[in-house]
Picture 1 (cartoon, rainbow, N blue to C red):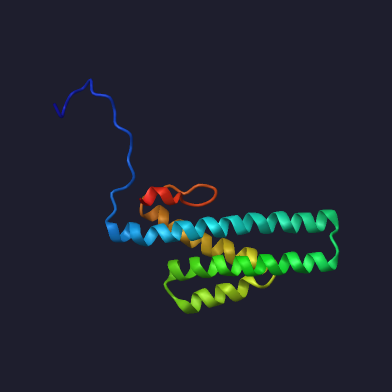
Picture 2: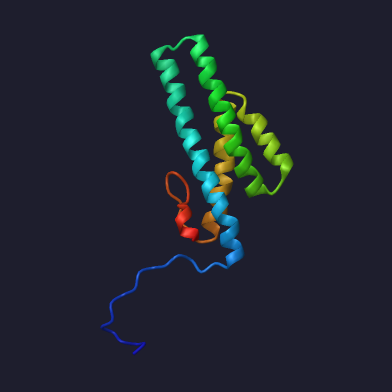
Length: 134
């Protein structure tokens, strides 16, 4: 019986999106998770460098490594979100500048969050869980 009032409620399932939308959103979710991890790593590194008073050689190495990793993650996400190579290159250049990189990462991440939420998926602290799109 379809209208059985005593039937147990069913769990809310993921939004019913077509396969092409899921195929487009899954790589965005994976890239978004990497960008969020880079934001977290950058914040921890900035705090550690200034609170612990880490010297110039190590500071340069940390900023360079974070810059390269952040640029790679943001380039992927910007290209997937904005579908523009120009936007991806500009985001990558912005990520090579300390402190500016955090702003660039947050802006690109916010665009990805809006896109995923608009499709009806949940977005947590580290972005959307890629398993939602399987």
